[in-house]
Length: 267
Image (tube, rainbow, N blue to C red; front, side):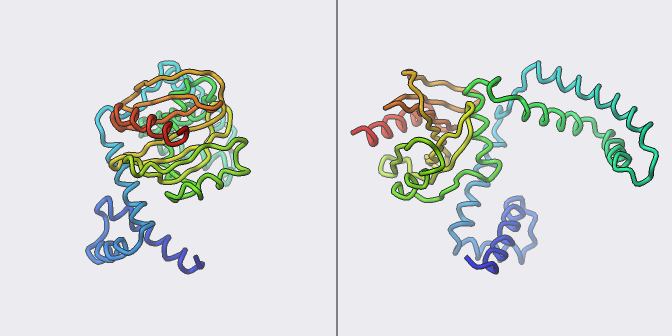
């Protein structure tokens, strides 16, 4: 793609979110609709964005921070107040960066909910993954892949393209199959980071829902189905690899996906 085409497509990407939120005027909305009909990439981005919007609007879909995090937030806010008082006394020059930073904190201090939110995000995002359960890490990666617009690194339904794409990026070879005939079309793949190591992630769809299938080497032979915060998890082990499928599809659909994937990769 040429530089001019990339710039043009950047414009469409900016218009996409305005279109979804109903913020475009009639002329730009009509222009974007015409473009959407001829651009598969934008159509796919639109589908992902609408899915995330529906997902975030679902009742009960939230991340419940533990009481320990709340306590750390309160402690951080108290520490911030003490540091602000000390820094204010030390900032004696008009152009001092501390003074500009303190002015920002002072101006936004009238919105305490934003201060708490910022502190909460900082603390939660800096909690070491090893202190989280594997289900928490999987769920965070699943949601983050959609919210951060990073569902795939390689976007294709061709399993013969996705599988070799992982060569040199991870230290094992994950099985890759397209299950479109079974109702689970392959979308693509990416690398992710879970439980202290780089893992493979395969992305499938089921009636507009996303299934993230995480794969990495493991020897423990277990098989379990779990549910957390409205999401379903299915785990299984084959040939020295552990597989975790995460999605908001119904539990029977996710179990069917596991069975179809296992049959296709181990005939």
